Amino acid sequence: MRSKRFNNVAMGVLAWVVALLIFFPILWLLLTAFKTEQQAFTVVPNFFFSPTLESFKTALAQGSGYWHYAWNSVLTAVASTVIGLALAVPAAYAMAFYPNKRTDFLLVWMVSTKFIPAVGVLIPIYLVYSAVGLLDNALGLTLLFTAMNLPIIVWMVYSYFRDIPKDIVEAADIDGASIMQTLFKVVLPLALPGLASTGLLALILAWNESFWSITMTDHSAATLAVYIASFKSAEGLFWAKMSAASVLAIAPIIVLGWFTQRQMVRGLTFGAVK
Amino acid sequence: MKAISQSAPSAGLSAEVTGARSFARTTRLLMAPAVIFLLIWMLVPLAMTIYYSFQQYNLLMPMYDGFAGFNNFVILLGDPTFWKSLANTLIIVAASLVITVGLGLALALLFNRTFVGRGVARTLAVAPFFVMPVVTGLIWKNMLFHPVFGLFAWIARQLGLEPVDWLAHYPMLSVIIMITWEWTPFALLVLLTGLQSLPEDQIEAAKLDGASAWQEFRHIVIPHLGQVLYVVVMLESIFFLTSFAEIYTTTSGGPGTATTNLPYYIFQTVFQQNDIGIASAAAIGAVILANIFAIMLIRYIAGNLNAGAAR
Image (cartoon, rainbow over all chains, first blue to last red; front, side, top):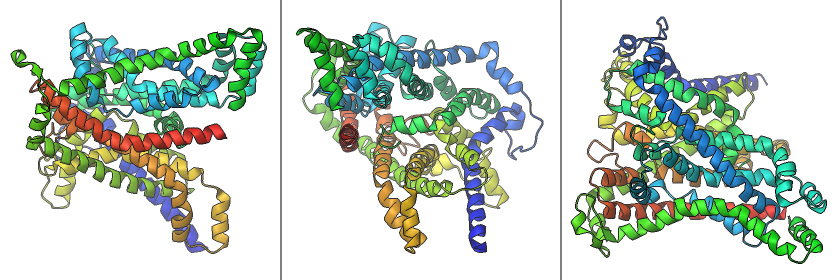
């Protein structure tokens, strides 16, 4: 019995050690963000130092362009999520409550487009975008994020709609409500929590996206991912500034992510794991 | 599910005969925007990529455009960099899969136990999955891997060892370390969710029958997790096949072509050599590779869907 208790404590300690080791790079980034450039770029690492907000100030200063990139990130992530939900809700509603023999095929087809690698469609999209002036354009990037997330959004909204008891929708139909009345008055209010977590997941995925942002934007529609990637050639010059900019870019997502872990699993595995 | 699909149209029918037809039209209208959007942004470009792969098309040499037959594919298959990038892609997928799933499973079992502060510890352990891949690349490249100012170099010196220039001497290992740091939390998260749905009474029964911890793991936990593991492996494969940001921000595919994977090879062919035809041919290769995993996964999701409908 005693050895079993010891075992439990040892396993708990091990779990904590592993958790701290995994988290350490993020902690190190956070610490570096509160250093000066001189403190950040040293041969012997500074574990103890008096924290300063100097790097955050330089990162956010007028000339840094941070707000420009942050605004693009917010704009493209929010807009693509809103458009995605606006496209997905009617489709998922029709498939969940008024299925026909093609429904299963359509749903699986939509999901399958998620598995086309981005490089498979990169070249035509790049050429068409440059021909119609959508390159380095917030709308162009937003629509790409929408396309990237739409299969997941449709699938998640569908699965939340399926959780709603059919009797409720049936009763509304029999009472003479039109399809759209049933959607807005009955189904949407019931599915609101599910829609919220779907939106949150889409927001996180769009915010963290880098392939399309790097290939399709240059400056005017560039997001934080592009801005931070531009530090890749700054050999040791701006570590503290880079860290401060990175912390500001990842902190909101990590916090949101912690609240949406379960939805993340549900959405990314297409319901195979709940 | 059946009840609604029959009763709903019949409710419309009882009102008027034409009701059923307008009803079908309404549901079609509801689905059309999403379907058309995906057609335009996914299927049309995919078809165009196939078209371009048979065209001689270099943005720098517009006078040589025209049908190329299988020429692009012949050039591609004769390019050692393409083969190298294909091998690199598969190495990244295989190594990252083994490590993330192995570690993820071990960690899931560890975090499935009860201990003080489990929620907080688990939250810290899954955090890397939510970090922007671009940031991941820069943290590791600058603050950990750097041969002089990186933390690993300092630790090596403390231990009296020669600091290692990770990205120069072990580029592939470094890329795999970064990818596994990001994705082990995902495997952990999914497998932990799977473990928590394990019926308690099965474990109890096995314990009463005197099963050892290993027998319990081998004969109850693993079969239960089988489907979850399958999904994790397929999904991660598809994501690992398309790894880009971690390579773009750290090694840029180098040194030489040591870490050039298929997406990075295509990226370079388009944006540095401007060769649309060859890049499209390589992109077709990437799609075929992804499909090998995707078809199995989609079949599984579709099967799950019908199982759900029967419920």
